[in-house]
Image (cartoon, rainbow, N blue to C red; front, side, top):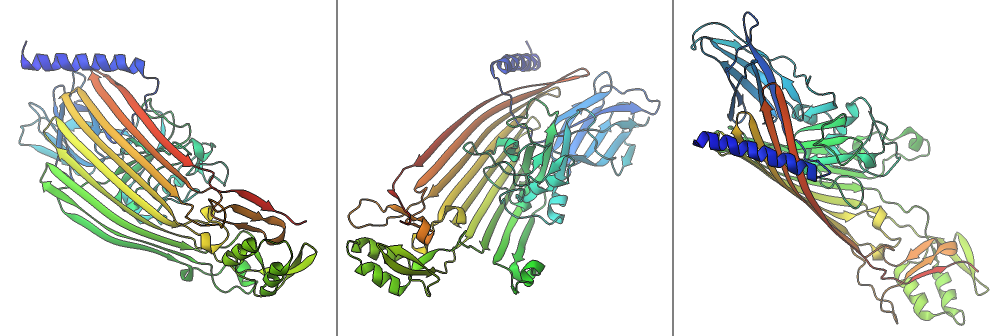
Length: 550
């Protein structure tokens, strides 16, 4: 058996094994990170041209992919990285036809038909601009957004609750996509009338979903998004994990030329007009909202046409006004003196209350304690509400040979600060919250032949969240109790009631896809093995005590 026939035999055996494995896995959720190109090559008489050599060259990296037309004149490129291509067709007895500016988009199969003119090989017909890229091979409803759209349209820089989540917010431009309207948990818009919790997120084909609550795990900075696509329905079997929108993002890579950016996006309360309803009440300034997004990126070749890199760092501080949901009251200085003089009242408890709750500057009300009227008043408290987010990522693309390509991505995001949702009432108990997110993906593409392509991917993401309770002391007790004084002071005295708690989620994926073209038929087989390890730690560290008015 020749080396070539052994290779073909191995390829067909592999396809058979993959087909068997497909029946063993109930969920085929591998995600595409590229696009496909198909077409037919004909001559001037509209007759098909078999065995024509078709070459697609990525204009950014110079990487070339070559295939041949079949007996029907059809050709197919599977798993091409998104970008702009130059397509060249040659055949015996014909001149060369070159089609430029062919756009390969994420999760789309574009049709690019070519016409050859009779002539010698040195004769070249150069078609400068390709037609619009239209996917006529599938019925899926899809919107693909390019880097130009992401950079030119005003977008929030980081993921925030609701539909404000960076580049993916462009999905609101799609038909059938609307704001969630505050209905239903999850992240992102309502797709096809469903709640945001039904959305699914991937980055470079790697699962980017939170497994404890719905929503995505890590945000990709706008500058680093090459493209993202939104699939609404009728998508193929390799997409899944949700019945809502499928948000699939690919990260930028390097090219043959060195390119870099320095940027800052700036939003500030002083740049916006005061709302008229506030102005009528005499409020002439906006509440605090200060957000900066600044960073830089660089990408280029390590070895021309072979090995490429891309890296980005971004810092995003966000400060907002923080206010209690309702007024907190406290005894005045005179009220504290009266409390301390009441017979039978614990001096320890009074001292603890005075230590953490400052006296009210003036009395606005009074409350009865053991028959004694204690003057109380509103205590001005401003809660901190700010976060500092650091994001960085690296990309590497390695064209090992004409048959093997390697693609790697790593994304890191760290956030620390204060959120009103995890803050107790009193400043002395304010503690920061830290989250850490990681995502890593490594893909290898191997061409067994022009008709058989294998894609293998390893993916990993991690979410780590920590809400501390601090080390506060209460005389005579092992832990500081959580004391709620509802009717009198509208106060929760103690650390955050749900702290301490921490969450660690690790998700691992192994994915393999085989694309096989046989005559006029194109088939795809695949399997996925995934494992999620979750550790949620939350202990009831505080004695809960509620004090009501008697």
